[in-house]
Length: 304
Image (spheres, rainbow, N blue to C red):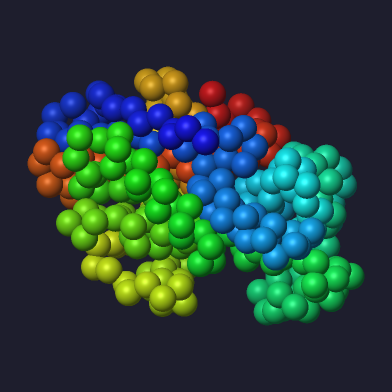
């Protein structure tokens, strides 16, 4: 796959601030296995193939980018797929689940309590799958096999830029993308994570994943809370106004769950003087645009 574009933003809102602001357009890396989902799934799929597994089992919410990406990957690369979905089944299926279903994914709907506590082997049994043919991918694709794909992102940036980014910024849901970026960035650079959930667990999740993958937790990353806009998949008018203005100015669509919150946060932090003058700041556009169909279905007319 060719490197995704890296473009410079000349933002009117930040014209008085001495920063070089860039966007890594990972939303353009694949039409359906988009953004960081491609990065995180690539080596999971390769490992599944090496182990002769034929069925991908994973889990996510009803509007999950990850479920959609796994379903698309299964269709494209010849795997059967099953998704454990948090919540009750409702008909008709929302656009995300309808897309996944059309890709051939089967669903097992479950309560929030069971979703949070059931181990992978039990999900395999409950879904009636053969454990010897099933490959389990955790929520969001955040496991040790995700890290090499994110290291490839950093290598691309090293080639595309005259100098490494002082900051590489990403939205955080499960912490896997931030962990992978931090592990691969040079120590003189910084990975900045913006959690999109209200719960204050992201730093621990990133450290836990790095430790589990045999990576020392480098001191080159940080989490900045306070930009969740009400919680996961929630929003406020200010976020929608920012997203619409950003799309008008740059022609780049954002989603209200992840990238909208990230870009809004970085612009706000820049105005507060968070970034050193003259710093290169790269925002990772991690995809997630499949979720726009479901958002527009629920909240028609808000997004331009």
